[in-house]
Amino acid sequence: RPQNALGCHSALSRNPPLTAYLERDAKDYISIRKNGRIVSSEVLFKSGLELASTGAAAARTQIARMKHRRDGCLIAFLAAIPSRTRAMVDLQLGKSLLIGASSITVCFEDDINKTGVHWETEVPAPLMSVLEEYLNEVRPWLMTRRGQEHDYVWVNDKGTPLTREYFAAKIRRCLSGN
Image (cartoon, rainbow, N blue to C red; front, side, top):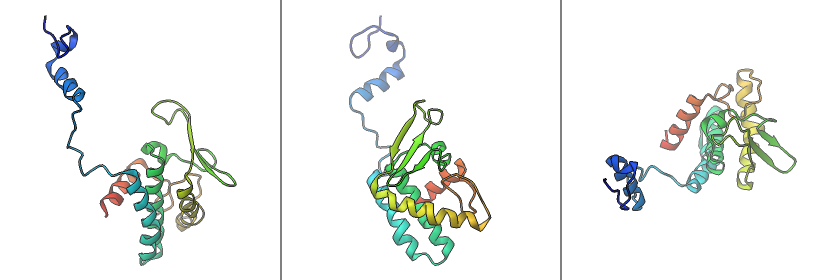
């Protein structure tokens, strides 16, 4: 009977590609495929805060300032609280984003999480002011432009809730610098 790398007889020994993959993985194989594409959350967080402040201040129009503030907040939020696209676009005030006197809590119900477990966390202090500015100034401004009324946290330029597609494209554009 064929033996695998450990000298054992198993179903793996009948599947050379799988065996090769596992052996490579076991030898601390390091893929260079993603080198240069993975950005640390610290860098993303700082970039988001910078876009929301300096980038917004440099914008020429009110809509551009508001978009920079929203996009910066969104990037900083994702860096501080990594979330799936569906969870992000489904965030709602009073349901999954709970605003207290001195804290903001993000709650993801079990049906929105990949693990199927309820999960919640407080928004970290460095993100609080940017998120509060977005919620109190930017979001209402964007929503008022087209007479929108809803509880979704993240809104597009017309004040409607972000769709998954818009959200994913927006993040790609922001991170590529466009």
